[in-house]
Length: 147
Image 1 (cartoon, rainbow, N blue to C red):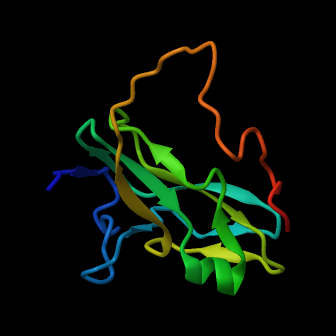
Image 2 (cartoon, rainbow, N blue to C red):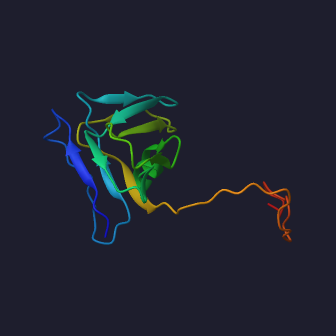
Image 3 (tube, rainbow, N blue to C red):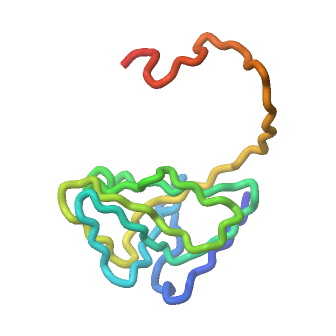
């Protein structure tokens, strides 16, 4: 088990820390720590604070992902998704939201706005090579196998 430390930032005592909404949930819901309601117009994006900073061990990263209900019902999703929070970042966690819906969307204090999923980061050794091993696929990409 990995331990992740959360520090609630001043003025956000009323905003929930990341919360699993069920015992088997992969993601922790993030809550808006806005001072007043934020209205995202269709096509508009906004950086929404979550009211906390965190510290996780170097073998972890946190990914910020959209909430499926907000995406389906309102067209609210995350840009740069999944967004990565590195283990050495100690600033406030913020969520970059965009309104792809047809109507203005109001983000109220405490509203669940995204989810955070923790992933293990493998140790990688980069090696330069003059040649790469061949595969059946080769360099085919971006739809090369059909529709």
